[in-house]
Image (cartoon, rainbow, N blue to C red; front, side, top):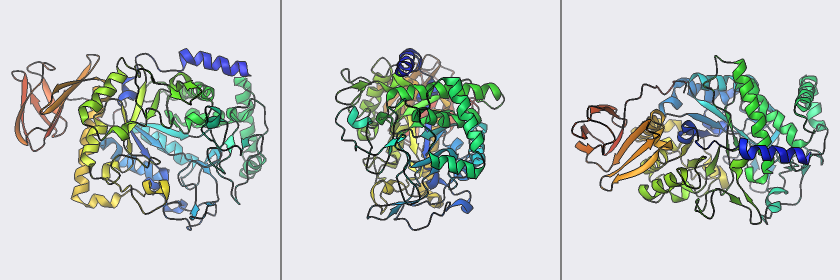
Length: 552
């Protein structure tokens, strides 16, 4: 079987990495990341399932958000107004039922990263039918769905949640980060059992899953599906392949468009290559069976959390590899189309030009040529997020939404949701969505700012996928051009009121342009445009015929 894994890896060195010319859609995509439990409560009847109690420490228990809440906001047009291209939801698999208690109060699996059954949706988040409707609703609005997936570990052991068999998990040693083995063949933290993804040894189903499925009346179906999967693929019944089967089921059943992969660097990269292979087949199968529901013929998309990737940027010596100390791994060669850029939040304090120019150079002819990155400013587990005090909310939006590469909005960035809650650890970053703040004019104005930037990105793939060129220092003006097919002109620091700006030969006289910030149109005359707007920012491009809800 090691030969099979090696063959998959070899094939993926040429077939599973991104194409030399990446898809402009994903390079420019605006991805909205939300914690399912913290975004919107669409069904209060499922707030406490499986006997869970309302006894957690602050912001460390379930708060009521669910898939119905996401569906409601999709139907309201909230994501379309933001120009969102894809929604990334935190994991919705069934979580451990109990809680951990480490002296600082109870913590439940509200975040979704403590799975107990990869074949079921957690009742706190909704049902299988809700997941199907969420994906279908997103697609109807022209929005793709990225599911957050976990292969590295199960949830912690609690009184209600026994440990999985030793044939499935290891509980020692704890990772000490001493090279590749010290980050992969170990448990991330104490009481987070590590799936034996390194093993090809066949194992039986965990007895607790057998008993659970039997009680739910689906044991025979689950076993039949597993038999068919292993017969088709020839994989041994090792833990990693069970998980690959379970993770690809929603892709084949509902048309999930891609995965955000959790803890990618803590799992053997060959596993991700196998996951990408099976996921791609599953999505192709769904699209063949649902030609009237598919958005397009794009392949399955996979973005990974390789924690720390990009921290020192992508210089000539570092390139796009992740270094374990004793081993370098290029995760793009193992099925990943994109990786989260952990440097962006740290560099956001820089001026726009060095920030934009360096990433454009990386993506076009540099270390990231042919692949993608997903930039972010704030997240669910980055305590060093940019502007946690929300003092520079407008500036943050400009830098993220106008940067080369894809952009990840963390739920509430657009409403300046507080990131300094009175809670322990990462919970500070995970307060419930501050919908009530939309009563305030200041919050509505900030949301409008994000919406205009998002609509600009959505209408013009050149914003994130095009080549950056500085045109002037004062006012700061730059262009982005994409293969001669799309081009935009951006200028900031202009006077409010009447203003005239050269178009630097980007557009011919007589060309009608739209300023996506004021939503006004203007015609190029004598190599320039003149507008009277109350804003200091111009986002210029030819008017798009595409609406934010179009299937693109």
